[in-house]
Length: 174
Image (cartoon, rainbow, N blue to C red; front, top):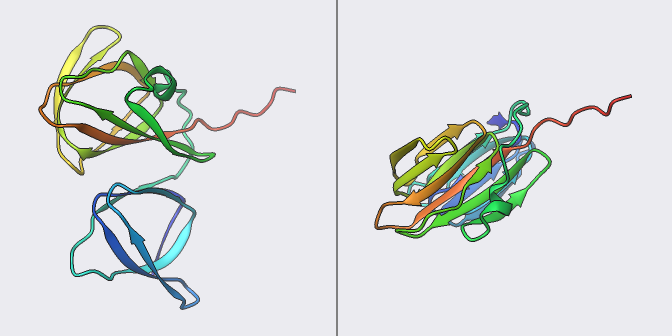
């Protein structure tokens, strides 16, 4: 038995789990690879009910961020970015960039990115500085708010889940 604060779970593989709650009730939870869900604070015990290992990335939401987003990737790049889910604490985006394709300049908030299918991406910041990064399925990165373009310089689809943290609400001025 263990507990988590609120979190976002990204399943990298299919999962069949027996989840037992503190009152002793157990339920079977089935998830497909690439499923993303927001989960409230939980105390539970988890057992893999499959004969195969499962992989998932859990992003626990501790304190709200104070960082303001540097743009809105969903509004600025609707060709590549889709909304997966949104809560009062996070906005979860999925970005798919085909081989040889590039995104326009766009911004993000403070975020955690989980790679679903890797390859090599070239990112260029507003200042013109570029870098290329190799990525593999299951890689996880944490980044501050930024604006950039991204070019898929690999021969495979770039597919990633980005969990953007929403800034803490500011109190209204008297």
